[in-house]
Every structure is written in structure tokens, then in C-alpha cells.
Amino acid sequence: MAVLGALTIEPMTGYALRQAIRDVLGHFWSESFGQIYPALAELERQGFVTRDGPDTTFTITDEGTRHLRDLLSQPIQATPPRNGLLLRLFLGRTLGVEACRTLLTTAKADARQRLQEFDALAEEMAAEPEHAANTPFWQLTVSAGRHSAHAAIAWADESLAALSHVE
Image 1: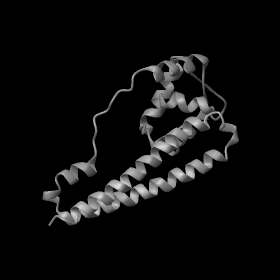
Image 2: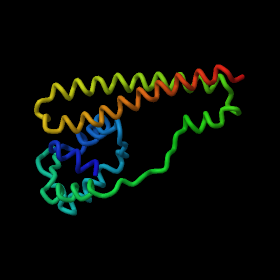
Image 3: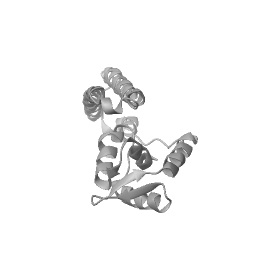
């Protein structure tokens, strides 16, 4: 889905696709780089993408766009959570209060960094008039990221305050 979706924006080489998935979709979707080239080969075999040019540019086909629309219409599959930070905090009595404070301080700094990245992304989107039709939808993902970062900062502050009463 991510590969086909990225190709709806513009035709890309496999390398450019890897970069786009990492740099753009990577804020909310992870994809193993080792899966991208086999996925492209399979999508080509199924007629969902074509390969052309000396730099091997991939383009989504009309059938690929229909297939992507079908994929996007399917119910979202929930994935089981795996959060190493929360697992460590849950076992904080064993880890120790000071180590938990360090984890929370790092999590807060990481959230502030993500917030700066989302702000920069919003500026980049505003400066790309060629993608104006996509911008309202892309802004939804940036907004979710910003809200998530703000929530993480508030939670870290609240958790650090709670730990100040623990010894």
C-alpha cells in the first residue's frame, strides 16, 4: 500500500521510493527497505506498476490505482502495541527511579525534536504548489504528529512530576 501510494504522487526510481518512504511516510509508517524492491517486482508482475527508462522509473498503472483504492478501503488492521519505553517504566521499580527519570527526559527531548520536524514539514508542504491537491490530506498527518508530540511532552512532564514523589 505504501509503495503504490507513494507512486501516486509521482513516478520514482526504487531508490527515490526508498527515500520518500523514509523521509515522508517515515513519520507515521515504517517499511523495511529490504521489502521495497521485492514489492516493486511483485507489483510489476501483477500489472500494478510499470518500469521504464534507463534509471528504472516505476509508474503506477490505472489497474494499480484501482488496486490501491481497494486496499485503502479495507478495514484498518490493528497491530499489537510494543513500546519499549512503557515496558521499562512499568518495570521501573527494578530499573530504578533515576533511570526512569532519564528515560522520560529523553522521551520529552525526542518529542520536542519531532515537533520541530513536523513544523518544518508543514513549511515544506506550503512551499510545494505542485502538490496543492495533496496538501490538505498531508496536513492531517502532520497535525496528528504535532498533537502526538505535544501529548508526549505533557505526559513526560506529568510523569516526571509523579516520580518526584517516589524514592
